[in-house]
Image: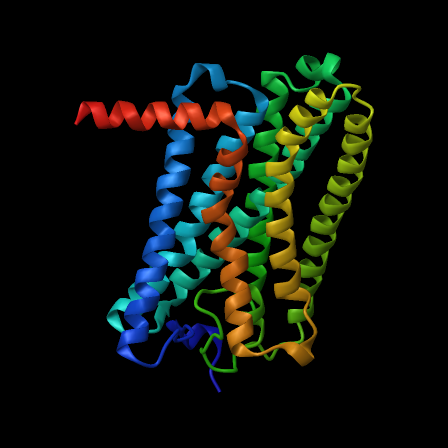
Length: 310
């Protein structure tokens, strides 16, 4: 029987048994990482350099791109390293840092998606008050609150999780460190405290989800009252990318953590976790870019400028 003080490293889930499959996983993760880096990097650069994109929607989209980039860089590089070098280890400190950063970026993602929902609501339902309710100072305060609350949430979860005595070995059942897997290694009754934190966070996320649903009901009611078809189409086109990102994020996350134990299996858990933690950050930028002509033009202009320089 060991405790947390004697554990120097954890063993992550081996994604494959054969060398060929390990290299295949490495190539898949590499492709996803490059797509996420390129897509999010272009969006961040385009919004930061495009003066005509200085609006609340693009400001929050820039922050969302940062969270997606951070989420990918937190989980995928270590999985790529392990697949390439045929290893499973991650240090105790590295596991704590990975858990903290993952919770931090996921929490910030939820907060920013909620704020962006409010942005769409004000834009469509209260357009005359848009400049007042979503001025530059208000946007900065909301973004700061999203990042600060995410930091506090991640700090509380990490401190509580790694304060528990671990006496069930050091083998984790996923390809990166996540709270449920570490709680399985604990034999302390105090882990109820961490379960309580998880329930609290889940309640807050559910509250955000209810707010989003209520907000979009109001948005759709307002859009359907627009007399012109062109006006309705324009309003819907600004909401659909955000709605698609919300659906992808919450559907995969909810099913990954709230599925019935009877349908659980290691392969299904792994697939769901990849869909929840890796796929949305890689696809979010594509979803937004496909429906936003201003963002498309800014990204294309940035790419052509870089090509002309070389």
